[in-house]
Image 1 (cartoon, rainbow, N blue to C red):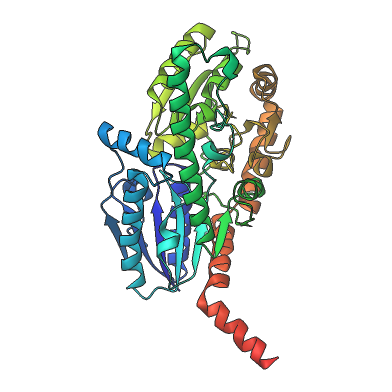
Image 2 (spheres, helix red, strand yellow):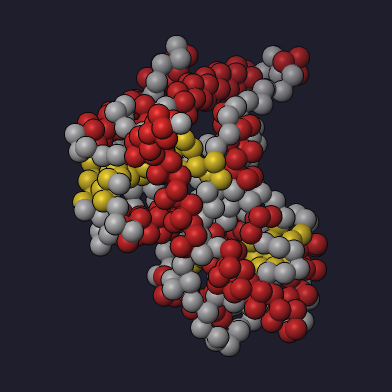
Length: 424
């Protein structure tokens, strides 16, 4: 097939997944070209060796304060913001090039700024498949706060001048969100098929947009995440961006409940981060007496070494749709203690390749202490983790699933079915 790939991704798990997909499809003989923006992290994706060409088109999302004020007024009229208009213009430019290239299918991926990408509504001549890592959670759930939650009861605030400021801020915020939801639904309806990374994500898609997707599990490249059989050291790892939903604060509070005599250091590896949240984490770690070492943009070789020398991966994300980190840790022989939510329940088998717990730091700490103090349990979880990655989460199987989904949506499959129907 001749496949046009579109994405607007930062560094992280979604980019690693796309890298695996592109590499695997290219090695099977498919012709691939990539369209992306000047704001995406193409260096982290690094697929130039596998694609015929990467098309990087200019995109500017940041707006000045004056434009934001104008957009506030526009939102009251349910008109699109400047950010949305710029993204639509960018996607329309990509679509013109894609449609001129005689491709068999569009394979779209998530957008860093708008999870549900706009490219689908502008490509009209070929089938369109989207791999959606997760819906825009801030619009459809408390992430961390429910955007639709109203102001406090009017009878308690109407006499205060601050009430009217809050009223207008609330009105503008909810109008902007309603405009974005409207555009997201149009984008959702523009795709012929939506692939998701877990059954949990499929349920999230159904809740958000009213229609299901198709589960297409990801995989882990054991060549990129090898088991090096290195000596384990007294530190626990965390993986994920420095944002509240990743639960770094929960990890710190968990380690504070481990006895000081065996309390390990927490090494947290992430890419992007919230500065205020990072400052609060440093203050919390000092308050709780936890040695906390945040590391940003760690080279891959160093990440692999950390996964091969840590004593446990502590996974505290909130409703993570899939979670690459537990499987990458397992590939390196590292057991996982994870909060049993979201897609993690599909990758971590409690008592087999890790331990699942509730959200209480005290409960997480009890599970973590078992892994840290019981060598037999550690070795069993480590061996099982390596085995489960090889048997259930290989890259080859992941590419098989994606290739089959794309072929089933392509004109080649449609013409095949037409011939079969005619013969019957």
